[in-house]
Length: 136
Length: 136
Image 1 (cartoon, chains in turn orange, blue):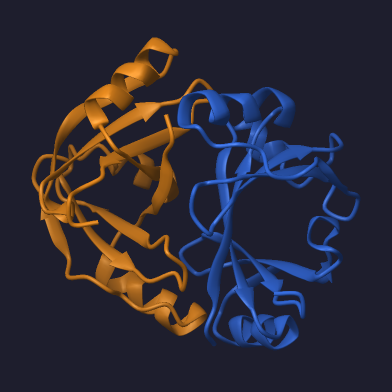
Image 2 (tube, rainbow over the protein chains, first blue to last red):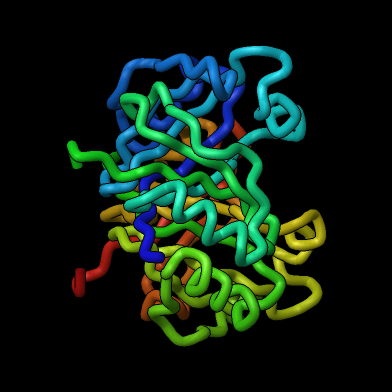
């Protein structure tokens, strides 16, 4: 399987408070609206990183959001997302090789309902997969 | 200041054990030798991410390495590195804006002795800066 780094996910307590920090300190601007993802129970927005790999700021939407505990432990760098051609096949391949599926493929509001999935690699790194769309 | 995402730093217990995991699971190959950085007390090697932003695998060189404690707490995503035109000026700018300098500019073995620095942003994110060289 060939995958391509798609974005870097960063958990923050407040997108509206953190985005200006990236702009002021690093000259990196917000390049999307804040999108609510009811499935993942998060709000997300993207910051230009000056490269092809944007930063995704992630804020819990609810107290039982999957990122609430991570935020309580300090937040920060959360996951790397990789783009793959066929997400069902990629998740199957990864599972067979010992990765643990945290969230099977579901549509993502932030990516025009393209499917995403979350898995733990054997080194305990959390990764997200996003299926490559026809628009890319 | 305009900065550009340069690489993603990931702390691992063993580069030689972790690199094959990226190759097997994600099709992402090692694209450098393992470089020893005596200043930072780490060994590092780079993995192609399929994008312009490679992944840096970081392994402690010594028991008192700056990443030893992070590894004991689980390791994983450690820092984002941004390339800047003038590192002394960038570190000064960031300090004046409230960032905390963890490591002032020093030469880095992994980048042909180009200068790097480490800082904490106000949201507690650790960032690295690397000075853009004439070869890029």
